[in-house]
Amino acid sequence: MIILITGNRKGIGRYLSEHYLEKGYVVLGCSRSESDLQNKNYRHYLVDVSKEEDIKKMVFEVKKEFGKIDVLINNAGIASMNHFLLTPTSIARKVMDTNYFGTLVMCREFARLMRKSDNGRIINFTTIAKPLKIPGELIYAASKAAIETLTQILAKELAQYNITVNAIGPVPIKTDLIKGVAKEKLANLLEYQAIKRFGKREDVANVIDFYIQPESNFITGQIIYLGGIS
Image 1 (tube, rainbow, N blue to C red):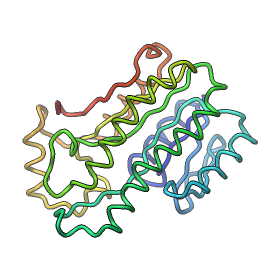
Image 2 (cartoon, rainbow, N blue to C red):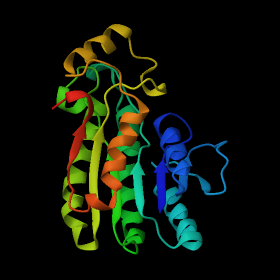
Image 3 (cartoon, one colour):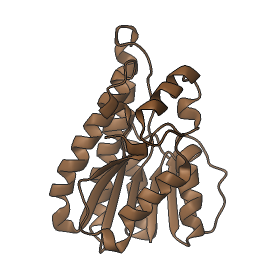
C-alpha cells in the first residue's frame, strides 16, 4: 500500500508517517521544508500545498516512480485564532489557500492517479471548531467547513472510481498548532467534550486505520469528530 501524507514533517503528520512505515507501507510525505525521517520505504517532497504548481510537480514525480497511490491523507493546515475584526484579509486568504484550496487541488490531482488503485482512500482533516462555532476561530473554522462540504460531495463524485472520501475532526492535541492557545481556552474546550481529555495522536491514527481498511469500502462521505463532539 502506498500512502501520501501532507504536512508530515512534524506533529500528527509525522506520527502517522512513522505509524504506517511500521506497518510496512510505502509512505510519501511532503512539507515546505526538508524532513529528517529516514526509511527505505519513505520519500519526501518539498511542497507548499497552497501552490498548485508544487502539487502538480509532485504528482508527476510520484506517477513516474510509483505509478499510483492508494491513500491520500490531507493533514497539512494552518490556523488563525483572532477576532474577526482584527483578522487581515491577507491572513484569511492564506488560511483558505492552504487549508481549503490545498486540499481541493491535492484531491483533484491525486484522485486521477488513485483511479489505478483497486480501493482508493482520501482522508481530510476538519476541526471541532466548526461544530462548536468557537469565537476567534472564524477563518480557520470556515476553511474546515469548506473541507467538510468538499468531502461529502467528492464522496459521491468519486464513488464510481471505488474511491472513498471521509474526514476526521480531532479535539485539541498537544502539537505546535495549539501551543499559542491560552490554557483557559483549552480547558473550556475540554468541557464541551463528552470525554474530557486532550486527544492523542493514537486517537487520530485509530480513525484513519478504520477508514482505510479494506472492510471500510462501503463507508464514504463521513465526518468523525473525536471526544464526543457532535
